[in-house]
Each structure stands twice: as structure tokens, then as C-alpha cells.
Image (cartoon, rainbow, N blue to C red; front, side, top):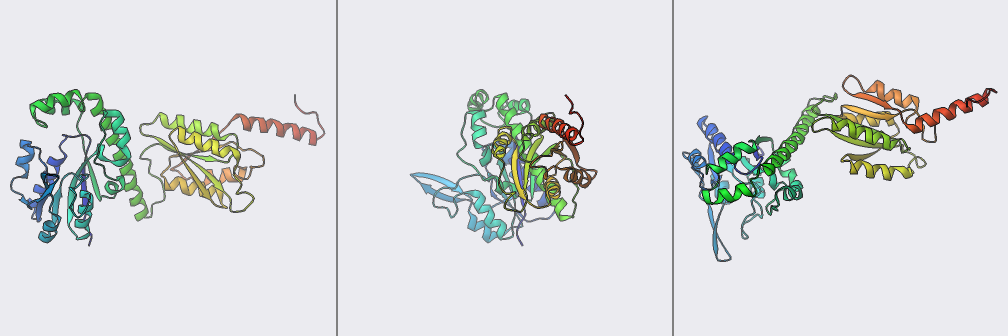
Length: 380
């Protein structure tokens, strides 16, 4: 049986993720579990070092590289010891050349395959997707990174957080770095603005992880109704000129909500003629991405159901559709399809029909055509 992976995700260096990992190890050991320290880096911090006392530690492997001596986790020794739980610090660490695996998370993967439960740590700035953002915020490029999917695949993730003010106090008191390094760090990486931004990144990333866990739970328990964990708006695009109005309306809607997001979908019917894309769609897709949304294309003959299925899949709280247009693309948002979306949305998804200039223009044309057909005088 594959082992369980638990990750303590640090919002910034020094928030206490290694301390939390060791505290969890001591707790589990006290309950009778077989726990070993496979690798812990305490950086000379007294509290962290004391928390490790009393736990069995697997000796490290000494490595020589370019005239220097390094100590790495001895993967073979841990596998031979085969504990119930292994504590492995710094999941994003790059191993010294000569080790079996290039990265420590690959070592952890071997432990998990062997059935060992692993408790590990990683800081938010080491996630690959955030590498450029972290460099922009802090001015420091992280050379050790880990694919987001490795961390997202963890069975449990716990965010270790601390306010910027509290972390800076810890730094000034010498609880993170020695006094000579602490003063420099406070002026550079540990500026209050940097720490606040890193903390926000961690909270947003963790929120995405919560959504994934809820999605798995809903799928595992056959729950089709969305749970409104955040404001998420789905825009249904027909390929007509009203699309830009809908996209901008969706962006304004989610801008008022903390951590809101929007998506756009275009449903293509399953026939060769309808498969020809509207020339406006490329521009609308670019606008969606420019405003921070995501664009989806779905092929289905049941357009209303396809929109509803995607809304439930992404846990949408609201669907935006354009007001009825009787044009060459009327089959996407004709009265029947619009009604089907509203009727199929249930109590959990709001459906908003947005009026726009193109719809008003079409209504005026319809009134004029209707007047001529009846033999009356068309309205001015």
C-alpha cells in the first residue's frame, strides 16, 4: 500500500514549518507510531533542535563534490529501516550529484511507493509556478523549485502562517538567523512588504488546493451540486458581439469578491457546419486571458447541458449568458436553450441574463420587421 504524504507549507522562511513537522512526529511517536527523522535541517535554531530530541534519526550519507563535503538523506538506509513514518525536511531540495535522484521529492516518492508515510516541508517560494512572481516581489530568484503537482498530490497540506510583523520580530530576536545575518535579512528579503506578499501568495495557493479537495470529495460521494467556496463565474460565449460585454461584466463581478475568478466557455455543436469558429472568438479568448480568466471549448449537441456540466465541474456560483439574439447564431442562446440553462441550474447556481447593445439593436430590427410583415407602419 502506498504511503501517505503530509506537507507543511510555509508562507515564508522561518514561520515554523520544520518545528511543526517535528512536533507532529513527536505526537505520533507518543501515540506508539514508529517515527524516524530521515532528514531535518535546523539551521542552528535552538527551539527546532530541542523539538528533534528524543526522535530516532537515520544517519545521513556523506557526499564529496568539487572538493567539498555534503550530507544528504541516506535513502537506502531509510528504506532498509522501513519506519512507519519518516520526517523529511525541505522537499524542494536539490541533491548533490551522485545521489540516485536529482531532487529530494523524488526520494520521497520512493519512500511513498515503499509504503512509508512521509511528513515533509516546503516553502511557498519554491513552487515552480510562482518562481517568477516571487522573484518580482523579493528580487531573489529561487534556484531550488518543485513542481506544483507534486505538492498538490499530497494527501494533506497544512499552511504554516505568521504575520509579517511577528516574523520580523522573531528575526530581530535571533530566532531564525544569527544576529549578523538577521540585520541584513530584515533590510532585504524579510521586508514587511515582501513577507505580506508571500503570505498572500500562500493563502491563495492553499485556497486552490482546498477547492481541489472539495472537488474530489464531491466526486467521491456523488455530489453534483456546487459548493460556493468562492465566487466563480462562468461566461457562456456564443461567438457573437455581445461576448465582450459578458466577459467584462464577469470580471467586474469577481473583482468585488475576495479570491474570485471567472471562466468562459464556447460550446461547439457536433456538426461540420457549426464547427466553423466565429471570427470574434479569438478576440474574446484573448480578452478573457488578458483579464485573468480561463477559456474553455466544449463540443456537444446539447449546448445548455454542456454549459451546466462545466459549471458544476468547476464549482461555479453564477452563469452569465447574453440576452436572446435571433441571428445566425440564435441556436446557442435561443429562448429554449436559455430557459434550459435556467431550469437546469437548480438552487446552487445563479443564472444572470445580461442585456447588451447588440441585443437591443436586434430587438429594434425585429419590431420593424414585424411592423412590415403586418402591413403597418414601422416605428420611428
